[in-house]
Length: 74
Image (cartoon, rainbow, N blue to C red):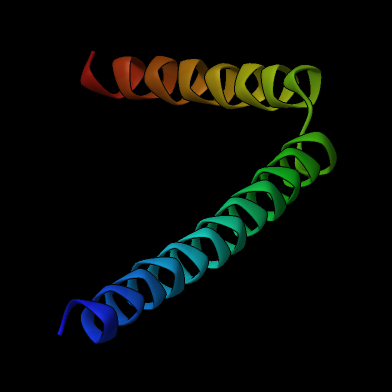
C-alpha cells in the first residue's frame, strides 16, 4: 500500500506546487502590467502643473461668483 500511495501523494503535491507557481507567476505578470498601465495613465493624462492651473482658474471663477452673490445680497 505504501508503494502505491507514496508516489501518488508525491505526484499530487508536485502537481499542486506547479499549479501554484504558474498561478503566482500569472498574478505577478498581471500586477506588473496593471502598474505599467497606471503609470502610463498618470504620466500622460494630466500633469500636476496643468491640474494646478485648472484648479486656479476654477477658484478664480468661484471668487467671481461669490462676489456677485455678495453684491446681490446688499
